[in-house]
Amino acid sequence: MSDREGSGSASPTAPGDRQGQVPPGVPWPPPKTSGLAIASLVCGALGFFSCGIGGLVGLLLGIIGLSSIRKSQGKVGGSGLAVGGIVVSICSFLTLVLAVGILMPAFARAHSEARKAGCRGNLHNIGLGMAMYTTDYPQLPPDLDGLYPSYIDQLSAFDCAGRRHAIVSFPGIEASGSYEYVGPLSAVPGYVIIVLDKAGNHRDGRNALFKDGHVEFISNAQLPARLQASLDLVKEAGWDQYSEERKAEIEAFYTP
Image 1 (cartoon, rainbow, N blue to C red):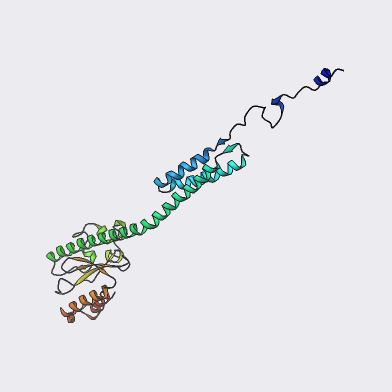
Image 2: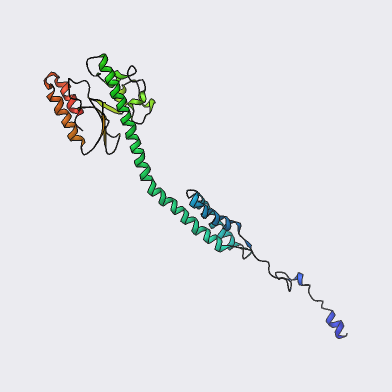
């Protein structure tokens, strides 16, 4: 057998037949960039403009994308983009948390002030209703129920939160509403408090309606002295004319 025949007996293996090998001269194909990694970076950046929602989505996409890249054994790339997306997403989400921490107290204060203003408006309406009542009768009404519906036709005027259905006809407007009324008094000066926010309507004080119709918000620190001043004026205006039971009711109203 000739050398040619011997050498020809073992035909060379075709380049494409070698498993796991790329044919000679053919470059390795570059790994595909993970779409999840790109999406993570984009969503993380958008999180600064979407109240942190994009940051939360970007964080999830980045974690999933980084995991899939590691499992691909080099077929998928973009781990740097995934890590960058995770970092940017965390930053945008923390920005939302920080903004909420700053803004929530401001929103709470604004809500509290709006509630106080609504209560002051209610007390102004109650004062007007009492003024109209006294044009028809020689004294203040016996209770707040006496103002509805002839003098105040909206039940929401008796509720600090403005809820119409919070007021029921029984056990009465004053019992189910947001305000306390001292009841009819004899001729007292205009700067005597006659209606108050119920305790707990506001954290830092109570709105007060005075006999002359004006309304003030009185802080918790000033309230005891202001109530005592009103009680002193009531006593000076003819304390002996009240029964013992009525005296007890009046003193209870002016005791914070």
